[in-house]
Length: 390
Image (cartoon, rainbow, N blue to C red):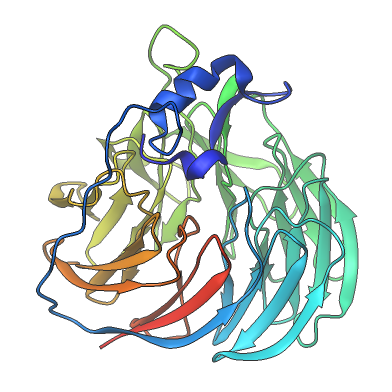
């Protein structure tokens, strides 16, 4: 495995305190561990740029610590948070407001045009008015919140570390429903969240399951298998969906660690296609292809309709490559040194490169605005960079 979110994503016994029982195994999979095999990340070689990637604006928020903070983007507004409780809104690089929540934030940012929501390590859900950062309401989940909440319409969906999903009313934070299911004894501790659409909520789970959940009452609409656990030991049998599903048209796609990438019909969960690939980093969908960063930090492109392999870019091996982001004719990824790489969507060739603050980008890059040439990344040290492709 490539980076395990630099310590955040680790295999743990659900309900137990920590991951010491298998720490030696995890260390072998983590190239940044002091006891890991001396396998060096790929060195960056000079490229011949075919595109220009420049910085639109840059801002700063606090350090992420051991958590993963993915920015929330609503139009041209970017909401960012930090472990120390800082929460801010930037419009085209201008700071509109910045507040201190007074609590340790652990679960990134979710936002709509009216509401901004974060989660804490103690399971608190904190909602604020998007316009000025004033407190709106608070609620509570059952355990630590590692993923960014999802906000859409009148619903706020929050996933807790024990794999429960809570649906709260966006107006006042009243609990509408809670969804929970049985999970394997051993699972990945990861910042996997949920994907909200107008018709359903989609979430992946330990054991390789993808579930569609009704927005009104939290009932399961259908369940399908992204992957099936295989192997003899509990560690070998981990087959978790450890990143957010992606919905495009009638397809919802997800990828599992030690499993496969698969696309299903959003209406009934029928399998459309699947390919063997292991990932905790995630995927995105572009105009003609689905893109996945695998556990060895290679980026794959698969045909959206058939799942046929189109290309593979493996020159970033063991560099802690982020979830890919399809931006127009390019694919953006970032690595453990804060370098943003632009790949050609046609063949995976390097098109451009830009360095941020030198700290890891473990959060997923986010599209910015209504164009397909802008996106934003947040580093572990808290640098927020809005980038444009020319």
